[in-house]
Length: 267
Image (cartoon, rainbow, N blue to C red; front, side, top):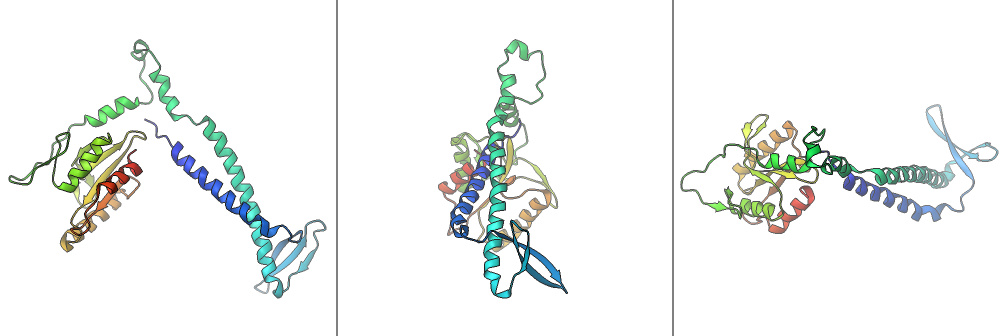
């Protein structure tokens, strides 16, 4: 699979359009300014400003009392340079997005007949095959202590708490592939078992999801702050390739929060 960045690029394009609009809204302030720009030099370690006529290129020393006028003209020139740059980026991004077609790469293989597929080895593993292989990875479950509470997800996966049960059931309802307590090697800790390892099937990106459920316990919080630091030293960061959720006895995690997290990172 090749990650498709279209959504991120479209978000950034909207940001650029917003900046262009912001500059345009300010343009009226600078309509009647003199047709001059500013030159800056140093003399005996002091900054000196000059007005420069755009037509004649003649310089005139700017007095201290003109500092507000200097600021206004400098802002106008800065805004205009920014506007030109942003408009150029916007145009190039729009042109790029018009031909940006990551799904089309996979379709070259998908559109082939089964007979032709048998003759080649695809350069990119087909999405469905990648997802199926990811789902079918075998690993030894960690096991449960005898007599511990039993919580089973709708798909029959046993988890350790009501909160994990909410997360598992929501993942299953939203068709997010996951592995429960899949072993992962972490610096300072060795092999650990994150609560969930999840796959974004659109991007092919994998996230580990740790739910910290007793943050009002000082010993639990201290232990898991160390654990979070170990994750970061290994290269796992919130939002990049890791999801972290938290709760206390007074503030339990809600189904709405779980759903929002999944929509943000896993769809």
